[in-house]
Structure formats: structure tokens, C-alpha cells
Image 1 (cartoon, one colour):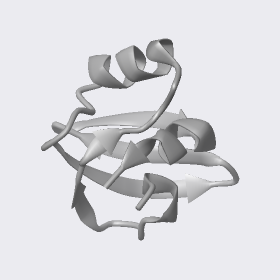
Image 2 (cartoon, rainbow, N blue to C red):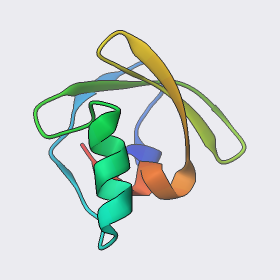
Image 3 (cartoon, rainbow, N blue to C red):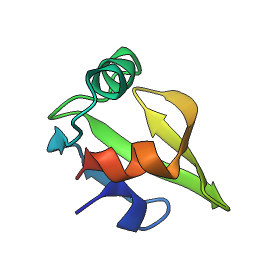
Length: 70
């Protein structure tokens, strides 16, 4: 399931980053978003997501959320 379909305040494990664009994959890896890592959606406003990875919060758009499979 894509992260964009996940519920708020529920911890998920990243299964993979599903994208054809290498720059998106590398950007998510720099945030610490790689397979086996825990991820939580803190809030969603319009098409922006506030996520928690490794005790850090980041803002990502819906395209990035669609690329993260949990």
C-alpha cells in the first residue's frame, strides 16, 4: 500500500520506494526512508504530508507519499 493511503498516527514499516525517477529515490534515502525503516504520518493538509522518520519530521508532497510503499 502507498503511504498516501495510510492512516494518521499509525506506525508503518517501509517495504520499498517504488519510483522510476532515481532523484526521488535518492532524496527519500537521504531522509532515511529505506526498506525496513519505521514511518508515521503525523498530519495531512491538502496534498502535503508531515511524516516522522527516525525521530525527525519532514514535509513531503503526495507524489513522494505515493512512491513510498508500506
